[in-house]
Amino acid sequence: MSPSNSQGKKFHSNLQTFPPSATLGKISGGTNPPRDADDTFSRPVNGTDEPQSGGWLHRFTVGAYKPYFDVDTSDVVERLKESLFPFRGTFTEKTANNPDLYRPFWICTTLIFVAASIGTFVTYIAHKLKKQEWNYDINLVTWSAGVFYGYVTIVPLALYVVLKYFSAPSGLVQLFCLYGYSLFVFIPALCLSVVPLEIFRWVIAGLAGFMSATFVALNLKAHINSAGERWFLIVVSIFLLQLALSVVLKLYLFTVTVERTDPWIPKASLG
Image (spheres, rainbow, N blue to C red):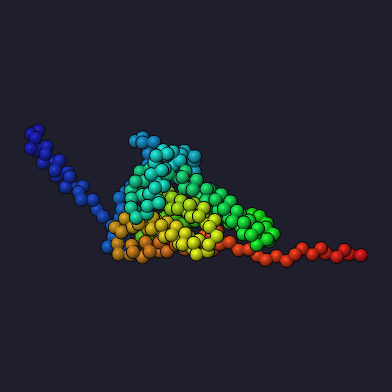
């Protein structure tokens, strides 16, 4: 067979498969994302070319999540820096091939410890300065655990469903990773809340909330922007939800109240 005939057949074959068909999503004017935009549990493990076996049952094994806890320290440091400089908007791009769950879990656990310890210390000092009796509040630990673990679990799951509905799906693990790192800025903010100035605490909580909301919104904007005309509404909702979290944290973690207690009066003995 002559080279010209071979090239002609190859060119004709390419015409049959290019361009790929694109279907419109539920957000008007949008197209479906690349096939690998929602391959949360199907990507190869440790750089191998073999896909994970076992079907959907493999998602309930330890091996399915092992790659998401295998991350280098240098990568973690770089991702933490990204969360502190939210205007870059390159976090999802840098973590697209290797999102991790280890550091988001570590961030939430650290936040619970910091919130409990700092909150206890601040309330203890406030009570002692006003010469009031102080009692340790165990509910601070359970409340903090419920807020942080619940937020980084429920919100990404809900957003995953919303994006899937609007035909702009994103990897579920990548959403967990993004929201987990978005809370890192609240760790130094909680440490600064020891300053006994209410206006200063409001400023710190507001600044941390704005940075966290901007980090999430800008990183998701690049993905949602290609979906269609309603991307702006989705991004604004994500931004406001993150700001609402900072308000809740300010009211329950950044606010110190000292309740006035009456002197202890022994009860009269019953005859």
